[in-house]
Amino acid sequence: MGKEKLKKTLQQKQDTGQNLFVPYIMAGDGGLDILEERITFLQECGASAVELGIPFSDPVADGPTIQEAGIRALEQGVSLSMVLDHLSSFKEKRSIPVILMTYFNPILIYGPERFANACDQAGVDGVIIPDLPLEEQHTINGFLNEKDIAFIQLAAMTSPDERLSELAGKSEGFLYAVSVIGTTGVRATHNEKVKGFLEKLKEYSNVPVLAGFGVSNAAQARELSNAGDGVIVGSRIVDLLHQGETETVKQLIQESTQPKVKL
Figure 1: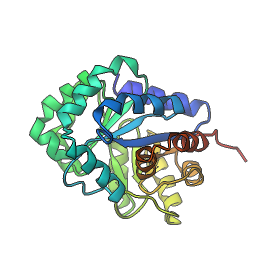
Figure 2: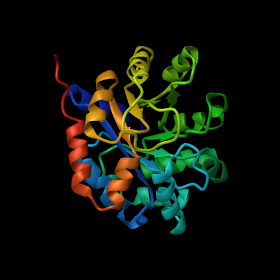
Figure 3: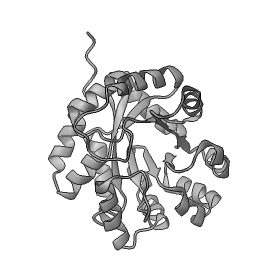
């Protein structure tokens, strides 16, 4: 479980030449009772892992689509403890790695050590905490290490090279490359500098580099994957699932993960 499962799963995908694809979904959007069904569906579509958002009242990194999904979940009373309990109930049924994306405040209220223990019991393989800088990660990384849970770092284009190198060196599972300047959300195009940014991170990182924020279609996913190793897609997936367009989700994942063509 944990770090080793995430590493092995991603490596197996890459060994077949596939681009990595991690869909983001909001826990509790549409009700917690459909969470197992959604994760199973994404697993069957060929996703590399699932990033599972925890609803929070002040999601500083999220754009409108994910904010709205979080509000829908909060209106149903969904909390961090409820999500962890629910994940525990079907952990033996899933093989796909699950990564929690949560802001630090819910963890602080829950208790960092208790959070790590609960993640372990729930079969969580990794965590992303977008508002916790490196300098403050000592508050939780020891507890995550004890439970062999991957701590995934985010790297932004605005950071200096020294900082990017440090983030890459500390990231476990994969390195989350923030491919836009701003919050999450669908973008029509990406800045020309993104390719160079991803290539730079590849030089620094010993784990796969995945581009997130703003990826909305298979063409973008393949383009970014050619410079890195794959993508994380949130707003587009959240919107499609909310609209019930599961076939479009399946098509997006399958087209995005097609084996790379060697020129």
